[in-house]
Length: 503
Image (cartoon, rainbow, N blue to C red; front, side, top):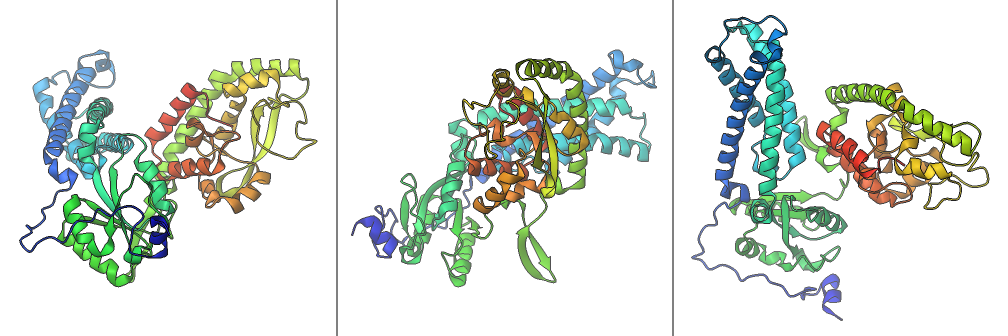
């Protein structure tokens, strides 16, 4: 029996040589708190000072733009307003904006490598600041009166300046020298398929926030799944405390089911004594994990999936506003292109040029999606419904060009305007295909919790048409979990750049 077989079977020899250290001597010094973000408090202070300076300079720039350019002709402006008279407003407004940034945890060390979250926080804080600052000025009747145009200009200049500054800081910190120091070093007790998938995500790019330094075999070496070769087995659970002390781990993650209740409580207490974060990887929640919330029902703690970002009315209203404006602009800009390609389709294949197909949308509600026809008439009469494949013989010559540039999808701006679709979201599928998908793909129907999109996160990452459906669903769920306006605009820009937004 080889080492791997003995490990799975429960014998004492691990699959790979154990590197667990011996128990520490009695004179072992108390382990101090050494998490990456605690060790880099200077970075937090420096970023706070940088944010403050950028905010004050941006608000002063807002004053110059409002009162020293052509904008001074807009609205009623007191001719006696001077720079010195507005310094108090700049300081008050700067203090309020810095407070909002801190309130939304912009300076949380865990966010330094999470650029999307950083951008989302900045945009949200600046928008709230614009309305709040004006409201404060009106309620308290601050003199000289604060210009409403200045509030809008100040919010915009602050947003642009903060986004630029934080992007430069991110470009510096994501270098290996700094990123390795900022990452939490994690030890995982046990291992399962979910750990394999998480490890792949941790390893994607230099901006990941966690570095898995090893795995610890649970009691009786009963790994559910063997860790990959790049993750060393550091020893057994019985020597975990020694492993934690010698490895410099900042985080312990336990796979649900590997320890009993008593062992779990004991490990949590041990982590507390060693100044190490303790996390549980629950096996019953393998989807939408960022939406997990701990609630109290009459004093009883209950863990469950809470609201996703697009379940909030404010976010939905803003996204719908962007959809309406974007769809109207899209139809105005692209109508000449649609007319031209519709004529080319008719010349090559006489008949109707606008193709209507039944798809499934929000909450499983069917609707008709519109496209410029890119295939021959009645292409599916003799066959079963399915995706377009490479070199599909049913495709028109002009259809290949239209699909390469997503021109056939342009009529879907009408679907967006009518409310059946959004500019960005999971691509809608046909009901005939969904009947099989929802039985084969775990959590497939969760993607119908939001409106489908003309383009999507999966599509701009190369997953369109006849590609792995499981991977597409993972990207769709990641989008649903982590939605924000910055991500939507990123996807729209990537659609134009990669020419891969729809299918």
